[in-house]
Length: 628
Image (cartoon, rainbow, N blue to C red; front, top):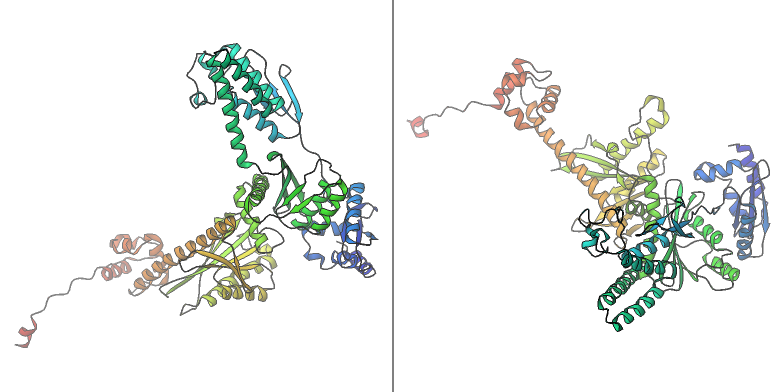
């Protein structure tokens, strides 16, 4: 980056007014690369050219390409919002959110033959197949096809009819009454055609029309005393009513609603829109954007870009978090389309469950990229939000101190990446020169040694191979309260490094209760995902440190007893422990086995064996006999 250019632009910002407006960033060719709005043009634009090295990578890249900027002063923030929206649509700058219509088209496929099938198709590839569509929503098409096949008991297996009729036993779908059983050979082409045509009517006209038509047919069959046929119609009506009842589980009693949620990855934001119409989920749309600004800013810009000018938009919009200028956005979109749009951030009840559903869908998209589960990615993202972090803590280190009976003092460091343990980067620390247990001093020593490794890697990269210490985490979690957090922050201050630090505290039953900072505690029990994740981290680091503590204590005890034997020093004691693993194995070894250990000699082995197997003392005369 040309710092002379950055400084020149920074000097220019001093002349900007403290008024609302729109700013326009341009590159060396004069092309517009970013458009933004500001409550104060001077404060907002100058922020881009101060402390450039601390910008997020995407912001840094944009600033790196800026060679000039322009601005337009407006009378209000509302006017700035309107102007920003129109200018972005006009110029489509590189670093603004650009909504590309990447959605494909989907079809309902009708296969040929005496036993046609109804299938979901993404492309029109079969010339012999008939297609209904196109549709823009894959969810709608899949749901419709599935409902039609289930309600009218059409086969969905891979068997071919009539060729495979009567050749094999019916599959599970027939036995659980989800297929009429064409494979049994008892369904005539006429019977199948009747059910298929009714299913096709359902696909084309919807459930209400199909139920009305089937009811008429059922009544007519009953009047004609054809009770078998009437029963078939009755069963189909019941199947459709059952499907309708199942759909109400995911329905919301709202005529027109969109639910929008976003999760943030390392450098990408994944956003999902769930579309509810007439109380039913009608569509799902996914978007991805580069992390140029905060997730709230990206969400706000998305709402403006996506809903501005849409006449088919919802009357209410649920968001998973508050966005900048939320009320102004609602006012602008209301005026734009001529009918009210209400923007809400739900916090409880069914609306909150819909938000969680949208978050999970966005997390699934992120999970597919990172090969993690949606639940893991959602928990990490929500943890970042709860802690007030700009981005999710993708790489987390957690620490705990453990001492065994006040004698063996050790520390453990575990690492979580993208919500999962990264065991290859776990580290163990033996606390040195500490006669009495002191958790604060031990924590200081462990964290100081960890940061010393990092500084060595940073200052002399050519002398060190990657071992996990060279990477700074996004977050430190310390097993302890505010005192432990203060110790960790002091270590970071001494090293000149910034890492967010929080403690993990337990209740009287040793269960995770909250996250703590020096300023106070942050409750996590209300957020199930975060609570489960933090509990898992705390349990893992505690398990790891306790395991090391016990192992070190056993090794220390064995070593102490070995060093009491003449001819056994620290080197031989260590070799013996590594070879035999346990005190019981050492005590049970013969002289030749002891002598075979690397570094041992036959005289030393004999002395050790004699020390481990002392001869019983001779019984002396009774005390009264000695007195005689």
